[in-house]
Picture 1: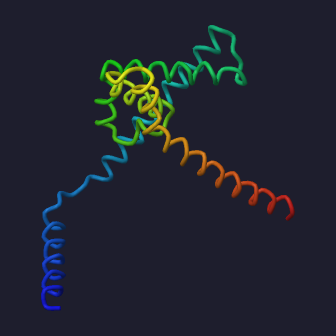
Picture 2: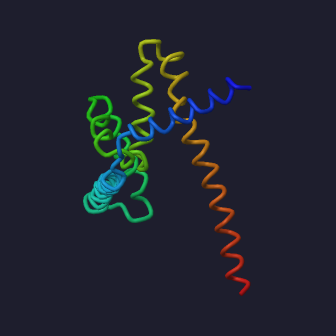
Picture 3: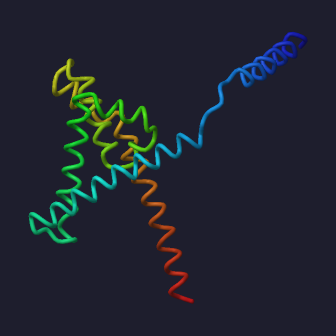
Length: 158
């Protein structure tokens, strides 16, 4: 009984010392970087979209697919050259949210496991990181869709 109390006191003392020694996190600056970089990626996407609409006669209904494909291609290319990872280290979460973050996750995992072969290495491991993004993104979209349906039904009744 005595050793259990002593162990708890040591654990509490350790937690207090660790909390004092922990460096402060610049949450505001990290959030600002993430916001600006994510917005910059979206601005590039908007410029690509306007480019396709201007020079290739796409309309607003059909321009989305080639724009997303171009952003994915650029992200995979930058991942292959090692530029995207440095960019995401600087910006934090700002590069994760747009579709370019998903493309980076897929490409970097494929590059990491390419030495194990295309089938078992790349094919077998490529969705390890991206799989959780797909699952939780789908679940979140489903829940938000249900909430949206409930809210819009309530407003239509009133």
